[in-house]
Amino acid sequence: MNQSESEGRPVRHRLSAAFLCCMLATISVVPCRAVESLPSLGDPSSDELSPLAERKLGEDIMRQAREADDIFNDPVSTEYLNEFGLNLIQHAPPSPQPFEFFLVLDRDINAFALPGGYIGVNTGLIIATESESELASVLSHEMGHVIQRHIARGMDRQAKTGPLALAAMLLGALAAAKARQADAGEAALTMGAGFEIADQLSFSREAEREADRVGFQILQDSGFDAAAMATFFQRLQQATAIYENGAPEWLRDHPVTSERIADIQNRVHVSHYRQRPDSLDFQLIRARLKVLQNITVQGLRDAEVAFNDQLQHGNYANEAAIHYGLAVAMLREEKLTGAERELERVQKLYPKPDPVIANFQIELKRAQKDLPGALAAAKLAGEEFPHVRSLSWQYAQILQEMGRNDDAVAYLRDQIAQYTSEPTLYELLAKSYTVTGQTLLEHKTLAEEYYLRGSVQAAIEQLNLAHKAGGSDFYELSQIDARLTQLKAEWADIQKQRKDAKRGS
Image (cartoon, rainbow, N blue to C red):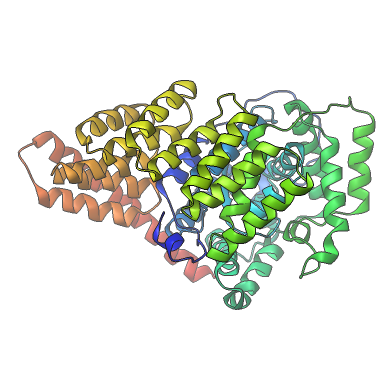
């Protein structure tokens, strides 16, 4: 349990190693295939931003968001989102951008596309969806905005706002979300920035319809229930009265008209009906996020009461998921016996191997100080699910907790050879280098971790420390010098861009 959990304070987008690796690992280019002919909203040659420039802008936004800890850090939930998004990507039309999904810890029902193919999803939206097809409908719609280049074209219409100035504004919107999560009073001071963003990135009605059409096609080709798009839109419209600001944030940014809903329903009527059952992991993650959205002492108690009430009245879609939610809440409260009891109920209801359940079992054994048991469980789960990155991170952490740092170094170096862009691996490896007294390698490895998290300046500082640590390994020192030259040039370019943004704002 981390410090903010033990003190009973809300989690505030703390940047964690496990989360960002998952996110970086999901970047992949969508395959090209024949798609339904859609109208173009403008001549691509007239766009203010080329696809490459748009991607660089998105990278700068994400770099600053990571530095500001504006991205949610739960590795299990993020891994689910990324795997889910990958299924949609594999059935999407050709895109000018690779896609990357990330989570924002915010109760508001919202999802948004940033320049360069970055798609953010609020935890509140995942909880609000009642089926995986509904979640897919929102993500597919956002992907439609990226595929049709609505953001770049919108920026062309808002020519007075330079790309880098817009990046600063978008970061302000993420900061507003953080403020809402931590302090409702502070949120009032930053809300203006959020509305300014919505105005800059608001899409025309035709753009919204176009994103609906692309999203509908992705839903169909991915095997989801395409009718879920209209169902979710209708439910949000009907629920607007219960929201303090009149409507969920997603509806304010993407106005859903009766005409749009009718258009989707007409498409459903002429398409083949397809019912798709939800995966267990969808229900598990929704229960998990209900707990993690408020891990104050009172928040955890409220979660327990809510889950027990659902069990008592039979008001649930999946009983195993409710017991899992209780287990997650109890573990955060350090009620280890209760958490173990609920885990046993989950496993009795769903005895098949599952990565989300396996992750929790390992986490619980670690909390119980059963390190041999945790290591055995992590090894078995890793064999069952070799591509689930959070399981491998837990395995390395257990080796370290057992004092087997030489084994951890060997394991982590092998992992880095396979997954070169995961900052968690570098973070864990640096910890083992610290314990074993390998100072030069410690700082060199930390530099790569910080760089992958978006902090170029911190990476440079670590390389300078590595150089000062010295040593007789000429090869290592030469590598450090070469990397320093590369990162200093990149940092100079970033500083120049930010100065240009200030002049243009």
